[in-house]
Image (cartoon, rainbow, N blue to C red; front, side, top):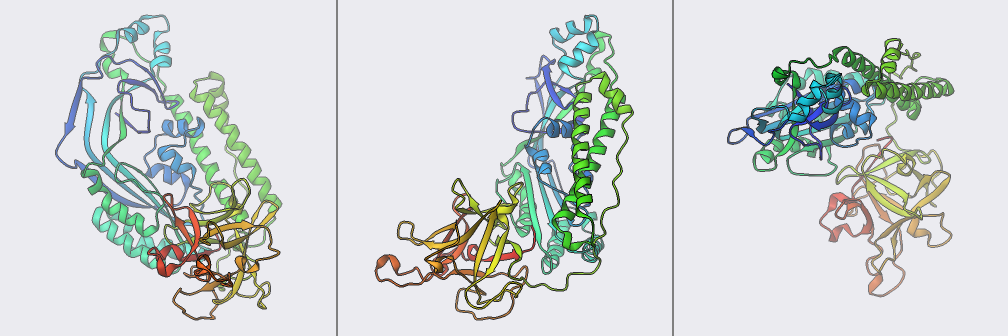
Length: 542
């Protein structure tokens, strides 16, 4: 009996299933409404595991995604469920990944006595009936559904050199995190994570079926979700999260016919699919090196770019071959028999020693993260390229998340370290266009509006931001370090009298606001309960 993940709109009990392509076919079962309900009160099964993941292949394996389901989602445009989650993850060998998975089963429903429809039986009696049957109804059918829920969380730990990666991996393996389950595993992960976050940037990504819904989360919130997920499912937030498949051969008795053996074809498709996974891992590593060249020993960028192009083309060619094979085209299988895997040239070596200097310097591009939900500041958005948001890690338009901290008008110069108390400008690029962050704008006399606009010729103070360690008058002239929590105060002066101008000198940048936690304003944190929305961190990369 096979199992595949459920996705919205897929649920058709008794529907046929093509195990080569992962597509649903016509219904061949007549009494699919006669269900056997296998359930007890409460949770039948619940398990929480953590795994160390070092490649895209390993992630697919730990998520228990069948080859046919993977192919269907990847080659035919699905971005839902687990495959949608996978498509957003570039797993490279230079970061460390921890996968958290919670599976909760509450009940199961199956067709009690599946029987072929008269139409399906008649098809089998025809000349080439077995071939026509498979094309129309597939080689398996949906026997039942599994209710409960599944939560998937992925922690990405960024490292800057091989020594850091080795230390983190050794620490995780030494903690026995990956050998524990349920409550003990959760406690161990919380302990490990609290130590890692003291020195490293950690990002969290999640996907769930069932349980209470939620958006982007911090690493700490992810652990909390893992702990609470079984209780949420048990208390009514269950969902269909798996479909049970059954082979037709078990119910063909009276028809006296054998379906076409597709085992050899499935084996060849799985071999090609593994090649594609290897290419994706390789491509992720190449892209990481090109984006983080400072972490590697000197290399020829053009040579590496040519490898990136070569393997991108090879993946496209392989995907076409896979599509033709899943459509059961004979010529495609002949080509697949002769396919040779392309080996990569040796990749540049990563530096072994840690980067000694933790400070941020003027003129260097950085990423700015809001502390409420670990969302990232992004500007030059919208039709006029003036809108500013806090959003999750981007899949594209990466440049509008890169900010350059530029010297203010108080003596700082390029390459000086940025210090608390400095007045700075924040610049973002969108292609060749440069935009500057400006706040305390007069939108409805509230002075809350934040925009990105061209370099100012007047109202210069609206473009100035003061880097502060707190909002209560704390003083410091220490250099700002990567990962520090700080506040940004707008430098607009209170130079007029009147009701509308009373608070304009007390405007601080605040993000992750509104229903979608994407809006950015300048407000007074002392009159606002969401203090963590005013807190920001700077990182070199996501």
